[in-house]
Picture 1 (cartoon, rainbow, N blue to C red):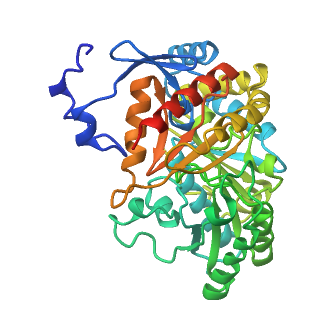
Picture 2 (tube, rainbow, N blue to C red):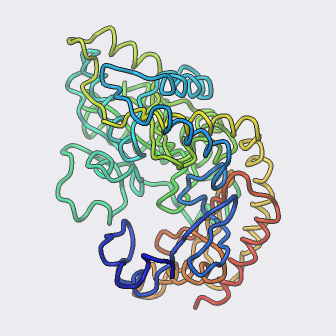
Length: 440
C-alpha cells in the first residue's frame, strides 16, 4: 500500500456510515480519480458507478473546476460572509436562481446536505413566525426519508438506524407513510402507477395535530439514500395541494436529485411540482469542495425581509457559508453542466440504462429493479436472519471486480457521473450481473 496507508495507520480515522472493523480488516483504498474511474491502492481501475456518493456529476478532476479552485484559493482563500461579502458567492447564487424553476430565487449557502436540511427547517419555522403563525412549530417528514444527520434532519427523517441511537430528537416531529410497495410496483420503469393515494396520509397528520401547529413538510422527490424510492404518478402533486390547503411550507430535499441526476436542473422541474424550498448540495460543486444550499421562493424571502423585528433578518449561518473556493467550484460546475450538456446527456442515457438494468431481472435473489433519470436500483432478497449481508457482499465483490456500487441494506444503487457513455453502462451492468450470479 502507499506510504501512510500501512495497516496500523487505519485505526485513528473513525469512518462515517462504515462497518469500521470489517473495512480495516480488508480495506478498499482509493488513491486517485479521473473522469469515470477511481484508482485503487493496488493500481486497479475502479469504474465509478455511484458518482462518488451521488455527487461527482461532472466526472472526477474536471479540468475547468480544478482550474477554478486553484485560481480562487490563490486569489482569495477565505472571506467572511457575516456582514461582508465576496463576488463569487453572489455570482453562484445568481446562476442558481437562473437555473432553478419558478420563483425559487433566493439562495442561502451551507456546507453540506445535512446543514441544508436543518437550515431549511429553521427558515420554515422563522417564516411561519414572521407571518404571524408562531404556533406552527411542528415539522413533518416521511418514513424511510433521509435528510442528513443533524438533529433536525434525523428528526424528520425516517430511517430507523439513523434515529434509534440518539434519543427523543426534536419534539413534535411526525411522519407520513413511505411509498415503497413491491406488491404493486415491482420492476417499475420511471414513476410507478400505484401510490398517489398515499399522499393523503399527510391529511391524517393534519387531522391529528391540526394545521395551526404544522410549519413544514420535507420530502425527497426521489428518495435516494434509503434505496431509490420513486414517486408514484400524481403523489407529489397531491402533496403540493395539501400543503397549499393548510398553509404548510413544502420542502423538497434535492441533495441527490438537483443538478442533473434526473436529467433536469431539479426534480421539481422534471416532475412539474414546485415546492417552497429546495435543499441541495453534492452536485452543486461536483463535490470538489464541500458546499450546500437552500433555495427559497420569493414569498418566504420577502416575508422575512419585510417582517423582520431586528436588523439581522435570520439569526442563522455558518462560518463557511458561501466560502469563496467552494463558490468558485460551484460557478465552474454550472459552466460545465451547460457547456457540456450534461443534463441532456443524462436524459438521453436514461432509456439505455433502463433497458440494461432491467435485463438483470431473473438473476438470483433479485426481487425488484427500478430506475429514473441516471439512477437505478436492484433490490435483493435478504438472507434469513441477516438483512443487509447479501448487499454488503455484493458491494465487496463488485469492488474486487472493478466497480463501485452503493448499497443500502440489500438494495444496490447505481448513479454514475453524468459524463457516462453507453460503454460505461455496458461495463457496469456486465460486472454487476456477474456479481449477482456469485452472491449466494
